[in-house]
Image (cartoon, rainbow, N blue to C red):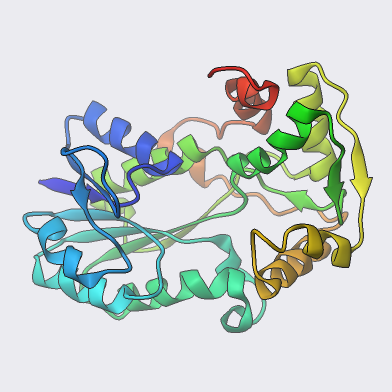
Length: 276
């Protein structure tokens, strides 16, 4: 029995590969551009790579990529795959998700798997702790962090906890066949997160409030306007409003979800410009 793990260089997949191997399970890491001969090529935007990657596989950890989701589901069925665990997003739970670019890219693969006879499980995490890495340059350089909604809440979840849930579901099929909403153990504002990073790094970190328009212009080279607007709308909806948390991480792994502070400690060097 072998598990194909797509996106092998990502934080969640990297942790998952280690956890599955610790359980003595066979793993086939996959990437769209493998740098290691032990990693199979599986580009989720290129269906010609699916059959070889899926040959002999019994389960799959799948990153959400909408462009050829139906083709991947069909290839998984043809290969005799018995279970697919999809890394989706809690964004699909937003109002009118079809018109929301944050949600739409995850809805397409969710629906493709739902229409497939291959059993599937959907993991819907909220905000990753790792999103805070977007502030690392500003912190290292002593530049204020610009925020349009400093008091917007996030449910920051450690990537290792997402991996732990995925490992539990892949190891025990009885846990599969449903959707799980994953959160961290606290609802924190951006200001709370930056205060934690300040304590961990020993640096004063300034916040400069900006307008939506100013932030969109600042981020124009990194994301398109539609995606930026959707993200800003989400933050606005969470401004001053704590996010409802779920106990899924502890229920499925037996271990409480890791805090954002623990993630910050682990990644302290990245905010100080030091070697990891």
